[in-house]
Length: 634
Image 1: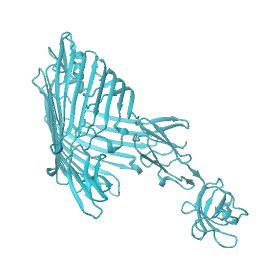
Image 2: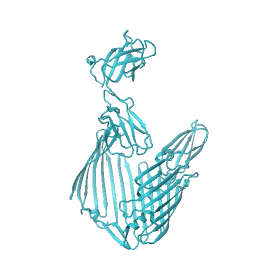
Image 3: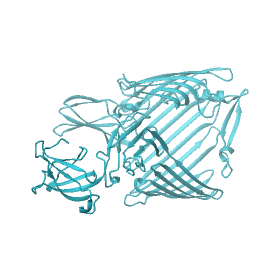
């Protein structure tokens, strides 16, 4: 039985579906959705219907086709539909053999903790809490599981046991059809505080998602959590002990009441602390995200986040609203944001952006301008240009100028180059009170049995490409990467558990080099280094005008074999043969049957003096194909 799981030892993060996510050092064993085909990932309803004949079923979401298949006559049930978003009703069309069509709609919404019927996800974590700030880092063990059931129900639950802390969660997700999708869970915690007190509490959370297709409105995710005064999540429990200081709690925050720009290390200058007798754990949190389509190219969105704390009047609040649209090839947008912290300090900003492409002939050049206004810094004007050069857009560049009444004028330029052995970035910025220049280089090194290969920055899953003698030939799907002198290159970012096309750029294959199959498909596992070897043959490319001793030509379609027995072409019309990867003096065998007299041979001249000068990347020569006494096997 396949576990469909991944084992991680070292530093990682827990999942965020059941408990809130946090970083840790230790061991993680968890199911991996990457190992599932896309048709089984996440959640989607089973599409049921009846076909009167052999019919085609097409499913569209938000105007786009997301699924198409052929079904036989009779009832059908499709459980491998992969929608593009978490909400958006599915329009099902059943097209019969005679062309008649039946159309019906399946309401579809989902929340992140829902799974398909029969799919199980689990996670087991064991280790030490780690967040880069806290001195208190307790050991813990955490387990969670979710199972997709019939009737669009996904129950889930988990437990977390740590030093001075215990917690459990149980919940369920449900697709409500036309009413959207909802999940509801209950969390219980038992926390031993640094003050030697013990607190127990509960927290209730719901998530909701719904799309109103006819109105173009989408509630992408609405969430609410309410916690009693005694409830601590694990992050709060760790922070409570970390902030305990001789009978009181130290609370750190950034002071936004003044403008510290221009002060050296201005972020550190804003750091403040105050002391209180209570910790102030989380009380309630609301998250709302709404997107409204307007016509074909416009959208209006609103994001609201609000969090309050026990023992405090202040709240953390963020409100964002924006409008994006386009006119022909000009894009523009308006963005408004209002933020306020529980320390009562806040900021409001308004931003207007405009983007215009300037490139022609497929070359990317774009100009962008923006105006922003904030309560503390006033109005800032920005304008700039960016683009790409060279093949594969290996060279990118940009220049920007900005002006603010307080900071004055600022300018910056940047260049970036993607090379086969690494990336180089250059940046220079200049302002009234500063000047800064930086040069950065990034790359990787892969050591293998064929030597060591310098690469662009490495990611999780790699493909080592071998093509001896193909120096300078680039990779199709990675700009700047090319075969080095040793015959190797690295595709630095491959998709695990998915089919990846590894191809050599055929336009880089010069005269005298033949690569019979310049593309391969591989399916790597996560973290693997897959080796792909391409056969290469070096030599001259020659167009032979062949004739037999009696003046006739070899039959069309006859196979041509090289001196090594490798098939190297076929005879065309009028005895023309194009062969590649051959050397002076090579003997070629032309065969069109298995009997005596069904073959002839020709030898490429060692002295190319009688050959025409190459004009198309190959030589041309006229040769007699002499009869051989017995047709040898290639």
